[in-house]
Length: 479
Image (cartoon, rainbow, N blue to C red; front, side, top):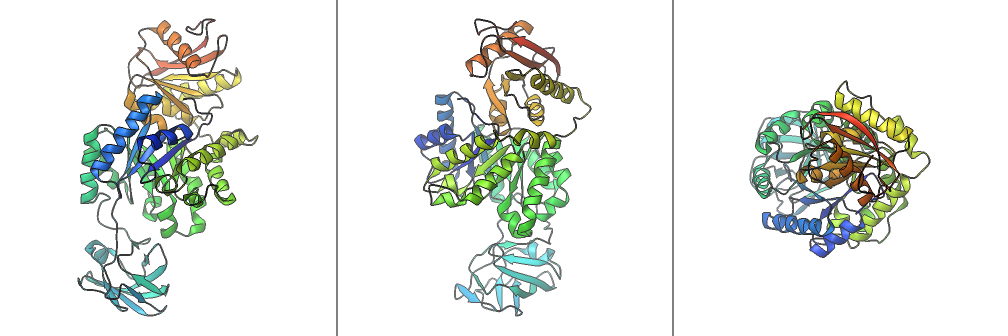
């Protein structure tokens, strides 16, 4: 199944899209990989969804990536005697460690780590920022605050702490259990880590994962922005989680941060996903708003590797329409006259490595000679990532003998992944590349392609060769 766009689409599965027939429809409409939200999915549901995705993959013949999104620490206040209480800006309101129903003066906060970490002057945002509190006195057992804005609070509402660095890691007990279940399947390609604050959060997960899955850091806290270079270095990919980021930071700062994060990831050669509320109105409407179309288009213009649907595909009334709409927007944007210039202007300088030099040369040659495709052999996925980092105008076909690599690369911009046996020699390498280019619909006899690979063949990380080849008249061999 040949895609006619470079950006990838990540669709979340849920009640509206859990049946195998619907998963297939979403894949055919344009979804390149699927997200399983562990906040809502039990281990049995997760395993069922994985089996259905793999069944669709076998039927369609294309590698499909699977992302398991861990819930992360959910910080919530306790309950109130009256369920909801009214507050007045300027009044005093206390959060404490007393496990008793709250009233309009206090509430139980079942998170000692918050009580110990918050300092006077720190902000506490309740219910996605609808209630804004400012800490005045903190003694480790209670936080006395002043109500800055907002008029009510109710049971179990979430707490956001934009100014506070918590002393706990990103993995909760539930997350550890979910991660173990995910790794046990051997079928999940990416794990998304919620509420990352510091590089150490990733180091803990790496010890458990041991390279069996790619780690995608969700950037949704100001503390992560402060150490973003270190976090990118330790991550395999990033997700710009604009929902919580927009709660903990000024809304008007989020678009600029989105641009910064996309460019930082591209410079580092790491995939980046833009997520949250991209086509929110399509949860209940068959068409998006004009503003949403512009939002999706902006992410495509910026060169994001993937764009994500959440509730639109998980629980909305029009999941297939949401995916096809997103695919249509991406297709149209990538054919805009200004698109190549914008993408070209954002190119990062290559690092002083052989792999980067080869990838840069492959793009330049392919564009100068107007070749049909760049074909890269990649076992570990690194060569594919480097080829994508260049954002070439011609298609990139990533050939890998490792199906897990092909699945993991399904989130990466511009890569058309094909599982193929390791070539036996250089002639076989050229013939195989040319044959697959024709079979996948990217070229025809007489066209030229450029092939990047490593010699000796089959040695991961040894990309050191470029070869320009003509596709033979039989469409099965190269010259």
